[in-house]
Amino acid sequence: MFWDELPSAIKKTLVITISGSIVAGGLVGAITGVLATAWVSSQSWPWFSEWLRLAPGDSTANPDKAKNQVVIEDSATVEVAAKTAPAVVSIVVTQDLSKLYNRTGPLFPGSPWDEFFFSFPFNESQPQSGKQKVGGGTGFIITTDGLIITNRHVVDNEEAEYSVVLNDGAKHEAEVLARDSVNDIAVLKIKADNLPVLDLGDSDQVKIGQTVIAIGNSLGEFSNTVTKGVVSGINRRVVAGDNSGSSEVIEEAIQTDAAINPGNSGGPLLDLFGKVVGVNTAVSRQGQLIGFAIPINPVKDIIQSVQKYGRIVRTFLGVRYVILTEEIAKANGITDINQGALIVRGEQRIDLAVVPGSPADKAGIAENDIILEVEGEKVMVDKTLTSLLNKYKVGDKVRLKIYHQGEMKEVEVELAERK
Image 1 (cartoon, one colour):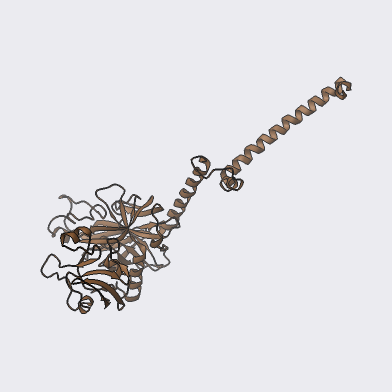
Image 2 (spheres, rainbow, N blue to C red):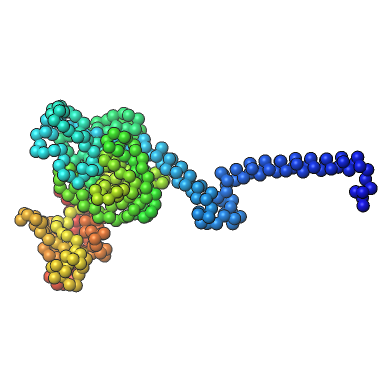
């Protein structure tokens, strides 16, 4: 053999050279492998492994991919919070306590908003005169010259004064331009320029399960508190109340489990692109992490109305109604119809079913009629008559399908302005 014929000295030299090459090559390969693995894992493993079809789609089988998804979502939340926080403001409610104590009973007794609107507790040792901070809420800026959206119940006390504290601590006196009589929305104005604003999204595209972020003045003390959750439900019909004790219905509300605390009223509900999809409005007393937001799309109409007319212009049909359910239909002997808006009187004698001289009255709609459709859209529990009519403007002519004295018929009404 060739090896056997070599001198021993040459054999020894070759063995040492080959062994050293193997060791050196192994070290270089190991170091390169470690560095490459670290870079690929942190930078490009998700798409690289997908390209090579090495990583299964199931995140439980691929913990690195699941971890990467968490990092991406957390990064999006951090970016949204940093981007939007400057346009979220705290609203401070101030009132002369002498007027407050002249009221009968506590500040807002028994209001369903009590757990959502932040009011400061009072005791007998406190002075009962002079201007004091009595409550707080949240708002967000929508124009660079200081137009702000919040909840109506945050600013519904006409005897109070309102101020806005910006993210940088600057304080501005606020004027209430409009309070919506239908939705729990109000529009404020401060005198300022070049302000940061929030972009308004499309609430019709909101999906159950998508991530949302709530920002608000929690407890009236912790401004720009950020919480994250998911959309738990859409098109919820929520009955709530305002600070005067009267109740109202929030149509097509967005339900979320993002933690919402007292003082969050009027704050934005944001998607992961930082766009406003809702206005945080109410929280359930019965459950945990059940909050509600008014979809932003109807709020856009309010904004346009205030910018154009200086007030909120609402359509008016002129009827009182209850949504017909199987239970109501059965109790009233209605056998062939189980949906629609049943025209009824209110609790008091003056609360007529149809307002005299209203568009409904002119069209011949009467008490006990059932409005079944608005321009072909069925009136349902999750699509009430009010929500369907809110899609139209004052002066629009709308076709209604109604059930009148045992017969189906269509009538045309010209919508008027709600006074």
